[in-house]
Length: 125
Image (tube, rainbow, N blue to C red; front, side, top):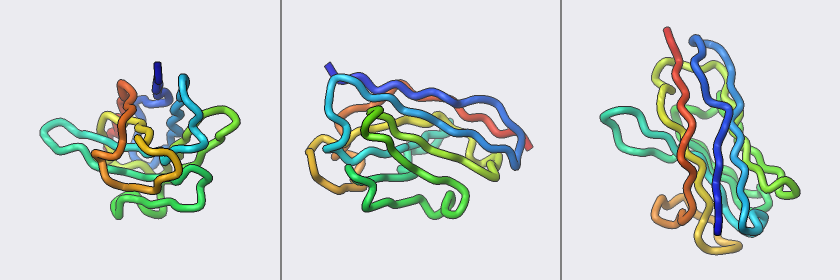
């Protein structure tokens, strides 16, 4: 079965950097759009960044533009989220997700069928 495993979260100070990794097994990642979502306590889940199957299309949440960079290594079945200039408002559980349909570019949450358990990112002021 498909497994999605995130890593790289932690407790950092404002202005610091972190890079999250997401390893996918049980499927060929190179056919699927992948994404990072986050959910803070008491808030709805939001899409942080999306990347198409070959990386030709990328989208970012306005709040992270210029600070976060999504990338992927299809040979390693891995998606990354480099986060720079972190702010306290970036504190959340970060989830990696993989799209349901191959070759399909999407930023619609319901189009993502495979989700990891999340990795916590906490940014102190």
